[in-house]
Length: 444
Image (cartoon, rainbow, N blue to C red; front, top):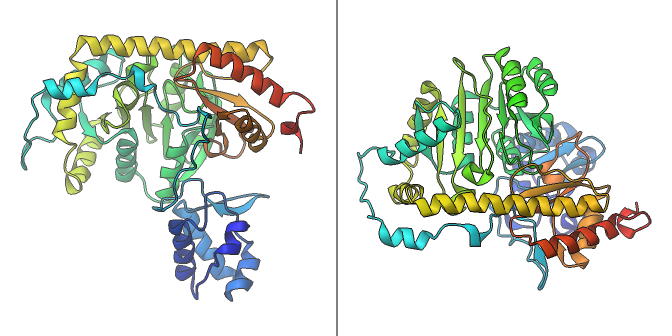
């Protein structure tokens, strides 16, 4: 309630009330997680009826500015779709930041060398949107993974592609099946578009088929699946689980299927796809962010021919195309045998670091998931207490709350991409101490 004592929500109508909350978020006065008064309390404060206040909150909820949960009331979302002047919380001096989900910069290819050696294209209005050389390389990579690659386009990152596919197929209020726990930025995107989420539990092999079937039976219009390196749990589909999910999806041919392969070749394991063999609307994104660098805002979108045409049409009405400088850079990097080798080596190191922490945790009786990718997911009783206690010991971890929907127990996410063996041993010991019975982190 501290933020609300410093910022007073005002308004003489539902629209004005919603704008007042948005203004508070934009200014940084209402921070993510700040709890709002109950409908009746807020109605008394602003002099409006509870019905009017409920209408304002419903609109804010539809756009992902606020979230409401039973017994927890309504609060500002973890990442509301409003620009804010708030700076990210700084990492204390000397603390080890394992919270951001970044790849190891030391394992990324030398972009500067590639830029110096490549011929920079001069793309003009009216030129093709996607470079044929890039599409050819992408088609080869996707086909090798079993992803249909007849119809491709280039988008500005995986989430950009997913958003465009959702925009051409769904409308506000439609239900989307998502992994729980799952990617926080995807949750934020769906909330911002007014789409409803149906949580589907995951284990180390990905989405549970029975739960997905239940979601489809309730009228779900789309499903978003991470085939490998799921964020935050590191889940990865194997052939058996992918086949089971395909069977579930085959019984619902009208459901839009989206796969998000955000790790690409940096995953270091085979991709097992759930995409339909024929018919239906589907899309698959493959980002270059983890293997080439997060600042290269480019992903390949494979989809059925109609979806690709719709996405390209919307893209043409907006930005038009993804920079050909970026496209040429990706072509140069993907065509370099040294880069291909470095990506494979990075995948091996990521696996060693991830498994190294899991082994150290297991030695201390701490369960953790992380079959693939850059993160390890550790269940805990009290996220806030564990985060605070480890911060005192010099570790910055990510709380699990942004990655969880109702029904998923608390946890913390640890990014292992840069975690060396000796650090893993110390971190496991500190975490074991914090989780020990009687420790302060267990209180409450």
